[in-house]
Amino acid sequence: MTRTLALLFAVIFAGAVAAQDRHVGYYYPEVTSEESFDRVVRASQGAGKAVRIDFVNLLTSSQLEAPESPRFVFFAKGADADTLILTALDDEVFATLYRARAIMAQLTVAVRQGGFFQQEELQYVATFYDLLQLMQFNELVITDGRSWAHKVAFQR
Picture 1: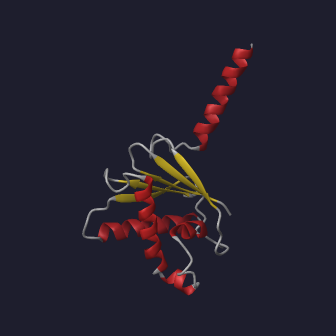
Picture 2: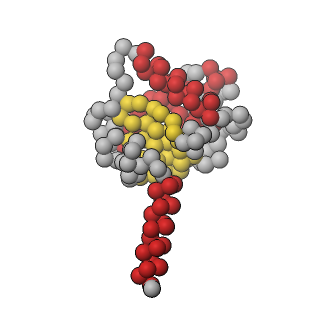
Picture 3: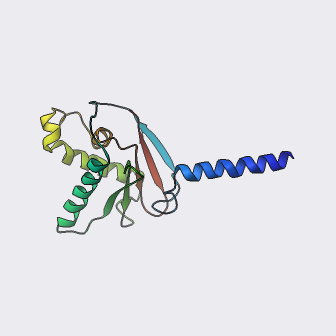
């Protein structure tokens, strides 16, 4: 009886975990590290699914218009497009989490040059993570597309 209850609990728990992150094993490997981003530089209003999808489309378009081939891609998933996934396309660009974080720093520079952050006087303090939080993404998953995935959960 105890074994049956333990087995039943394990099956239910495994199903709940799988339902919680159904993208694992399809878009990226198991999450190997996590962090929480809880800084709020400005309250967000009106950032919905359409804004997040337009943002991903803008990033993708700018990559495709560049003369070199993209080394990583962005895409939004979830019913509300509230999970941003960043996947490496080669074995060098995200060979480590530290290299992936360097890309995040590089994206911060691009974001700070944008009109929104300058208009809101955030260009000296805001980061790429701040922008994602303002757009009400729930999480960012960064992956080398092969062996590791890092999840950033955005707190509001």
